[in-house]
Length: 95
Image (cartoon, rainbow, N blue to C red; front, side, top):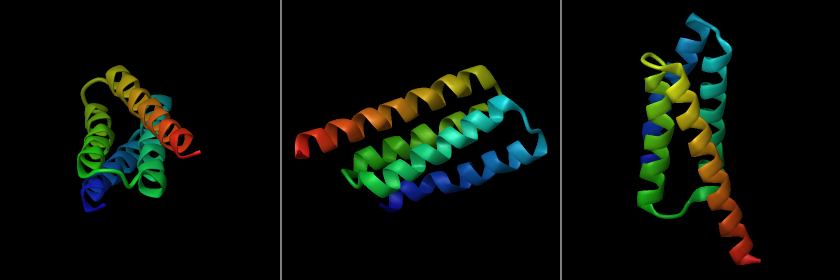
């Protein structure tokens, strides 16, 4: 669980960027980053490697906001959909 917390400084950095220059693209990336983090924190709890990948997947789009907002949006949406799919499969197999 601790490895997931490596994404928190990047999430706070994303909030700072959002308050500095509020745009729709930045708001979407920050919101999807926080949602992905919250889903993994609440329902994840799988393996260490999974937590590392989610932490990396949340951190990179927030850092990419400075370079290319479109690429950051695509990566944030991809990570959010990937997390939802993983949780869907996880809960479907339990039932």
